[in-house]
Length: 304
Image 1: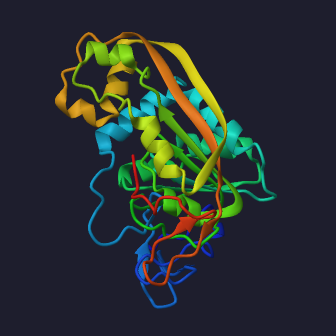
Image 2: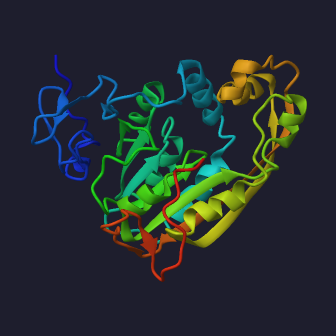
């Protein structure tokens, strides 16, 4: 039996564009979404649509990582981070807010934003089919689609009022393109203090790059201006099960023997709201973009 178009996905059909030919608008037909040229993208029985074509993404949570992430987030340990992202996203709601979560994972943060915006609709993009199964069920107003954040998004220009990026890769040029003129970008990222105690107990875990903030500012500066930042920091006591899940939901878990890791850790992150800068059209000779006033650096590549 063909899978019908999920109700949460239907409002996005006019905002999507074909990943193959870039034609705007998709329509449901026999368990898939199709463009006017006939390109077809299957709707999975779990509720997400497979828009990712060609070479597969180089990263993405596998099934054990997704299960560990879901268990850990269900404990509420990161609820303060979710509330901070939701507060910033809801600061200036549109009449019918459209939220795009780039690198949505299981949809935990997108669901928190939608709870704060009763009239909003949300679309989560992620390269992990396993994570998208959860994201498609995270909220009754949340749709999910497979995509690699480092590629041009399968969305029309100005499709979103809010772009959400929580502990995920970033594509500044595409964030800017898909946001409406008064839209907001919300970025949540760890500080060097985040889980420092855990890294001390497990030296093989991924450290936070001390140059991360400078690189973030440099990458976003041609496209965005920060308007508000919240520092979210608190202590968290982890029992053995939660500590194992916290490690297992990251790529570090593949290289570690997590013994004796229970204990207290510091959760530390920055949540920032950004507004769009006006960007001048691409030069017909170079294809590059620049901000106004001129003199900014050319478009940087996507960054983590």
